[in-house]
Length: 245
Image 1 (cartoon, rainbow, N blue to C red):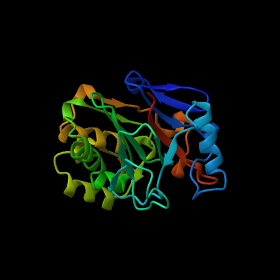
Image 2 (image 1 turned 90 degrees about the vertical axis):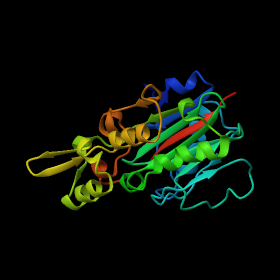
Image 3 (image 1 turned 60 degrees about the vertical axis):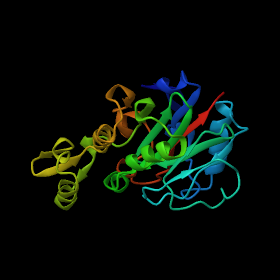
């Protein structure tokens, strides 16, 4: 699904619909302003590299919410906060969201060429960010769920995602029909699969199995930023989506 390049991964299934959807590697540098001083420079560099430096960047200070914003005009795009997802049909914009273990969720209405992108760590997943993203596409663009493509990008692997018993019980109570498929117990330790949880939630919310694309390589193999694994000097990778034509 994700084709590896020097500085990023590109989603092949979206490219054929005239949409650029990528995820940056450490080699592209830190992308978020709230982590270091080079975020803006690195964002501009990656857009220049993919030949879309003329687009207006849309991003927000993410707070692990399930809030999704519809972007249709330039007004009011400064100092956005408490938003973890965006949708648009405009060719003016390029959407950025930021990651260091959490899961990027890309969405595309293949008939209308409406796009979206959301950040979903365990809190976002617990609060069903993916449902918020799907519902926003239906609300704003009258999307039919059978026309929606979803790509679950590069997040932390289950093998690297140890959680406590309280975490396990929390998901068991919220998702009694799903939790058993997303946890494993090894020597009394629980490990959680955030990618698979979002896959199951996508199916539960009406997305066709053949329209869900998953990258399971994990942040360690992908050489993207990881809060858990890097520990020090942790930057943020960026998920990026835009309409090319």
